[in-house]
Length: 362
Image 1: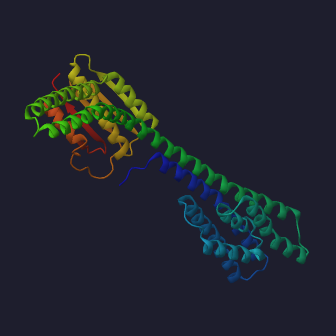
Image 2: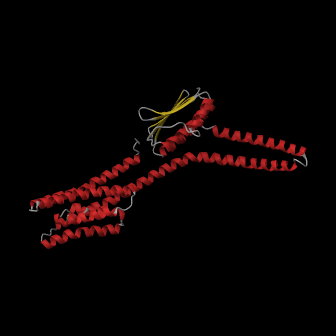
């Protein structure tokens, strides 16, 4: 089962708090009961009670559709309007006020205001005709209509803002992780571009000399070989410099990236006795592990511990059963770790966490 994210929890909070507000429509049951006490037939009063509950349940359903971003449920809204109109003889104004609240996520604010005013007209006209109009009843209807029709759009707006903020955090975190890779790709492209262009040009020249002057072509190819070797040395130097990471800087960067993605990160590091090569290797593992946490989990907390040549990265965001190491991710790192005389393992724990563990010679 997928672990609930903070965004899920916020959505639940907004939805359930809105359910509580919509449940105020059940106060209409009191009006139905008062009508029954006043002499209304029992079956008619029972039908009124069913209508009250139906409108409340329908309102909760419509709000969930709005949170999901679904298309406007025209039939549900029309059914809610008819049921609200049928509640007019009961003067169930708290329930009648639910209808403009149900419509509000799908129309403009001005339209919501007009529908709210229109929803109060039938009850007002009915009591004026019966000669039993009371200003207190109209005031109650205005209060309920304003609370419901105004509160539902506000909750929906809060949900929209929260979702956009969450998506922005994820995008920022993934961008920070990929920037370093893009920088290296640009450096490598600049480095190889000129060398390979020169090699291609000199090879073409040697090809042209091959029949006319084999010795000159041979000399040219020897020079091409020297250029290729020089280019190889430059690439190796660039990769070595790229791999020679500052361990402390990587730890600080990874922690900042994870926390930017709303993942609490705890770091415990005792790597003072490790060789520079080992520190660089562990820095690469930490960076790749952080990338996997961001891309393949829903973690809320990540712990990084380095002590006596043992690195452990633990997160609580396991999603489904993990597969084998990706050949371009942890699989490649596992080969590098084995080449350095160490071991790399990555697996979930019985407690629901995921642990990346590397052991290298201290």
